[in-house]
Image (cartoon, rainbow, N blue to C red; front, side, top):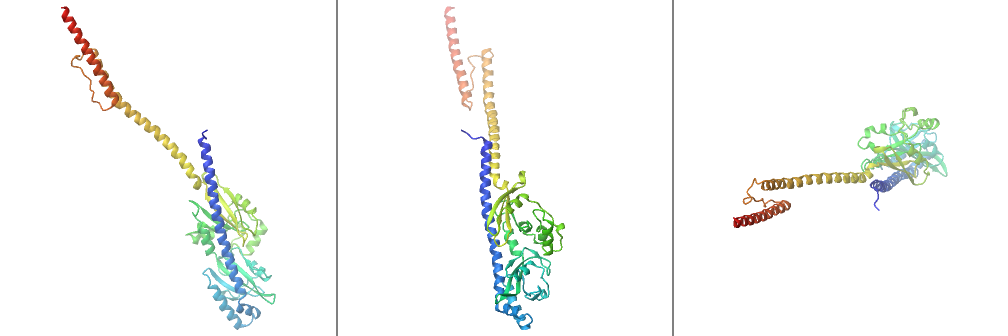
Length: 391
């Protein structure tokens, strides 16, 4: 039993879509793991700094100039570990930077920062991207308590630019098919990195910090107080809504790697995406691809089949016309010659038909006419002979 063409095409499209989503999921998970590994590595660096003897010694003797110089040297060496490190610093218990790899950072108060408050309570911390009060550019902050004999004496923190995270996200542009794009969102649905910044880093700040849904007023005020948006107020944020992504992200558990598929757009703009929850931070990494990237094979096959059908009909028509003309012309000439013979316009003894035509049908008809003429000549000659005998 043959399957209807429409049903077969729809099934093929669904199969291609399923295969595409599997490909997207694998890539999304891989990239999310890479971001997780990066965050864990940078967090491990600051934990190591918090245990350096010169740093611990200085935390125990904040007013000692010699201890401060030794701590500065240790912090400068730590900052040289990676190019994205902008600053590594010691923050005293009051929230003031007292020693740093960048001298101009010293004296700045970061007492309001969540990374300071959390580390002062004894926990390591990875911040969401927020604007530095020193550079006024978005950065990540990693912090760890400096303790001695079980007592937290100070906090160490690193300020890390977003270049490496952006590199990872931008690397997925076009990775799983034409039009593939990616972005990283925090737990509030705020975009932290987008693949569209590749080659356009100068426009990065206008492309990120676009929430996928409205943020409630109290949360927005808290984020603004933590300098999440720099000089922008919550009211100035441009919301780029993706309700299906918001629903999928909210359903994912925190603190464990998990993913979910979602769809958005309509018609030719319809897309399929996978959001993967990170472990280190409750962020979601999103990789999406236009649906047509995977279904165009089925669409093209249908178009090609229709095109071949049309070409077949046209070719049959052309061949029919050519064959008809090649047969009808010679046959009409034969009919004309036969008519002349029958009306006596051509002497029966001199009449003959052209038997040298190239096609078989015309040749056979001409030969048949010649055989008929020969028979007519025979009977005519017999009649003439019989008539002459009677006279």
